[in-house]
Length: 217
Image (cartoon, rainbow, N blue to C red):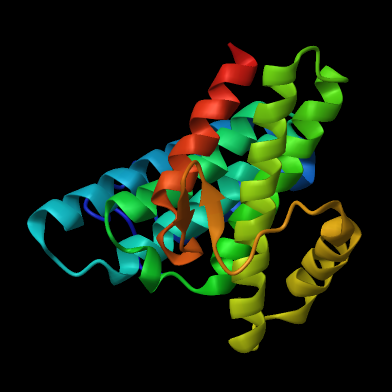
């Protein structure tokens, strides 16, 4: 992994920052882990945007952004701020769509973010208890269906890529547990009156963020 802003010693290297986040997690200082991982993600986002605007090589910027996003969402989940974890995971995936680089991200990396997203959504709903009205129930249903369907789609791609078994085993168990609920849509996902290809998930991600925001407003 390349270093970020190496001309500014105060920022340090990407590897150094991720190691410091890991140290904070290991020591139990989750507040500092969230802060530093958030700063790292913001820096990676800025770098990705700059490379996109300048039409320069995006490879290292994409890799760093995805790793930083996964790390920050993990830290948010450790801090048990499930709403923020959900929005960060979905927002990061949407960023990849906006910069037209989603197809350059390995399926296993998307699996991690979608897995974080759907589990954060479930945790958030459980914390809030039963749906209090039909709108709330509908928003929750759509969010879970979209996320589970996208997770399933990229899980299958990751299996085809022979990605690491540890992550995939956990995801397989989760998908198997919800397979009978009818939440998983394949091969396309219904959004309003349209069928959306999961490989072009931008409209679904925007809808998820809109529904999630409605639930927390």
